[in-house]
Length: 440
Image (cartoon, rainbow, N blue to C red):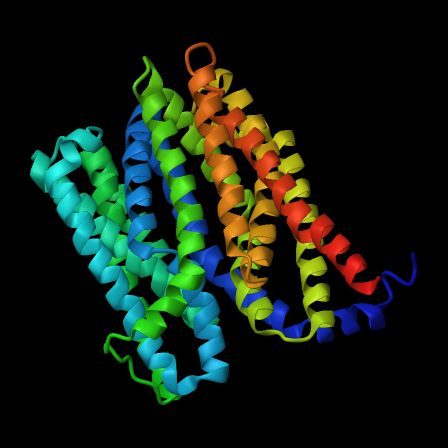
């Protein structure tokens, strides 16, 4: 036991994984500013507008996330991995990579705009906001989708460039916008105000991200090249399509299950409570998310097997310990946390506890997913997320009539457990047997 806490061993551990821990530090600082301020804003908004308004916003947000999964085409993962690889191995092709990434998402967003214009009434009747006519509301959803798509892709590019200090600045700006604009608009205009606030926040993020990306590319003497390249597009899609498929499964299941709950009597209130519980879940997942963000460029680029294993083991153990500890703390302080959001504790108690348990399994799922993407097996990630989506939809459908407030939480928990089993088999058990067969 004394050896474990020996100072020299701890220093050696940090020295051997310095790139990982440095990236984790700056990524964490940036997210503290953004997510911390955003979480504080959501507390204020929920206390002011109530569960039903938050529930309506939740179902609209799920529509946007579904559309973004189409617009980004998995580039939240491919941009990280490919930017990191091109920066080190093919710097003269980096500008062409980024230009084609922007072109690809732009073309898909044009298609999404056409679908929304002609089919939104049938596909997404939940898009109704008192402040705007129907067509204006659809236009706002399209603009929010576009801004979020490019914001996510730009953040991925900055992570690939390892520009974590710049991410701190952009995340600080988005966090300040959350407090100053989203809260103010929500008080005055309810659901419409919240949607407008997030739209403005995303657009400001896109502008700021692009400024810092240009600065980083200047230092590398790289210019974004918008010349169409089938070869580059193919490389983007090789990684992006499996990730897109996986994201599509999850975003479709989230939208459909939210739609199911929203359609029930008291569904908006139930959805609002689950939304609040999920925000607490995201807060607890703060460190696991940061580890996941910095993990992919490191394990995608590192060619030494020994280093890869060390980083994988370190990241997985860290995630399990932190998420378990924070989930336990969350349960111990349940009354105070629910009181902070001013939600009905009698209705929210069981959804809250189930979702806190889900934190552990979903955090592990994030890390294992990065392992398979970096290991050039991204379709395994898609299969795991397909399992999540099928179980989520099935359990929600079966439970919503009799257990409206806990249907979604149980669906989250069981689906992530089953997905983890698939990923653990592939990452651990299958690779172990493959190595043993190779030895023999």
